[in-house]
Image 1: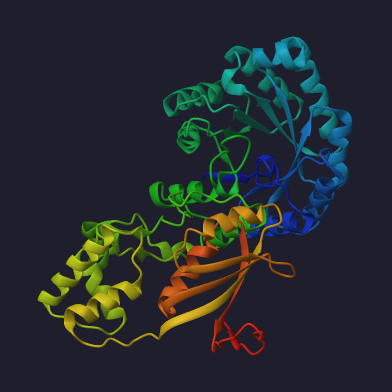
Image 2 (image 1 turned 45 degrees about the vertical axis):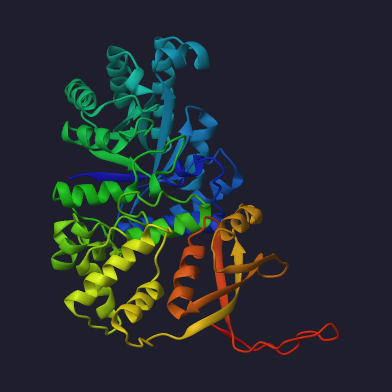
Length: 471
């Protein structure tokens, strides 16, 4: 059965421009524990007092997961791990020739002596030990076997094979791990796979199949450069493709969204599992199939991770999708009317990037000759946005200016950073517009107030009586 060590609090915080506050670290650890990961790598206490304090608080939080702290191969660093109360120290020291020659200036014999000394010291403190030969994938294999066995003999019960610059391929990973497994003394083996060539998850799964025990992950695939395997992708891949599921799937979406909120690290819309478009269907062939049976074009039910499917209506849309959308509003049309509505939608779709439900209803009115008054019309509203502290307000403003229904934009002081006046034809269009604006990277929260009355003014008057309604 696969094990997962999540390193969001260590590897994930090494993502460029990402830094967690103390309370955020504790909350992330608690969410990871809800998911059920076996180990949480809480950080390296030598980095800063904040990191050390976070490890201490996480270690004392009575979580089910084993709490791991990272450490350089130094006495004082290992002692810090002990002082923080972590269950395990993860000692790393590079073993590839390029690291030995250029960074460490050490001979292989000196490396082995140092590793044995540090692991023996950690064990004397009562810590469990994992040894990570950094850049293992580019290390001379015989030396790798030698240094890992020396670490095991000194007291390490886990070895982490690190593909530090992401140069492995699934077939070579499987071959390497299989032989390494045969040559090492009894221990558990972790896999730390970087994603520089987009192969991290595939390499990790190949390594597990070859005899490794544990995959290192981060939420949303964060980390140095291109990151490491994404937690949700690993869990769902094993649950759906390998029949191994002992994790709490429903917590994954909340965790991913929390990380986006506190980091400003927004995932690609088409990212598997947690991406905005992961369960969105557009092609007429696809939407027809999904409406009849979602299994036709979905590998699993999105509700298992508290997601919902969405069907996009535009020029690619088929009749079944349009008919289903109209029925959501209680509108039935004839076969001929439906064909005409779809034709009109395709015509509009060739002229603009997005079609709203209000457009569909307007077309239906024109085609059927009936008044379809299911939502109110002509709405103006005041929209206020708070922007994440590390995001430039001007970058959000630039994105907002691309929406045709945003009339005026202000940068303001107070609890919110941006104010805007929006003008839309109905409530549905307003909801769609607000949802699009909320998805702009950096938008933290919003408040919308409907404008109930407008008063004309002349040059001698000012507006002093505008009613608004909070929504």
